[in-house]
Length: 289
Image (cartoon, rainbow, N blue to C red):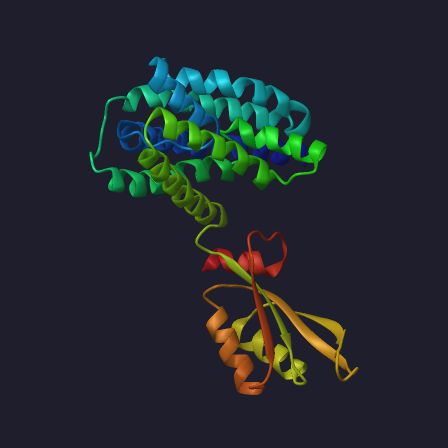
């Protein structure tokens, strides 16, 4: 009996991923063909290389992306698993199809508008694809392998590749186009982060106070959140300290600070962004917000 519901959940998750990957691929294609490429502004990674080759040879952009990404997708079998490879291959095929649909559909001739809105739209599309465990950029896969072998970070490797791509864009198009391309990449990366984290971004909070018990009870009563007490030792005093730890939504943060300061105006509060949470009462509560 337990296997059947589990199988249904797996199938539902797959269909959900395919749906959002399809939407993301169409949005990405729209950004590339309608904003960026007509204004000679490029993306980074394999898509950026494909856009440069497309301008030099006039070969089909979608076909170029598939050809250049295929070796990296095959490399991902051992590292990322069959499901990732399947979803990534699907994303690339849908992107190639969607690029042909939006070909020659130009939204604006203003390169500044194309850069800003192209970056925003591109970030939404790529973010949806990444959030559903897929990818459009083979350099990200390669970076995972290279970083382990040579000791550099994934971010450093991707940045190195993109520097080379934007230098090539400056030679092929113009240095002005290269600078606009870098701006597009920056905007898209920020939008991708927003899509990945979602609107209900959460905060990890630590509160150090001599009135930790009173504050903890007040937070449970007034905010209906789950808290954990941690044990600490004061660095100067050497005295035992109770530390309150909790994860809350960004909407609850101002109220939590107000409650804490009402009890202890000198309480130390540390707030850190949390990208993902699993299990516990917190997630159930966030879903209601």
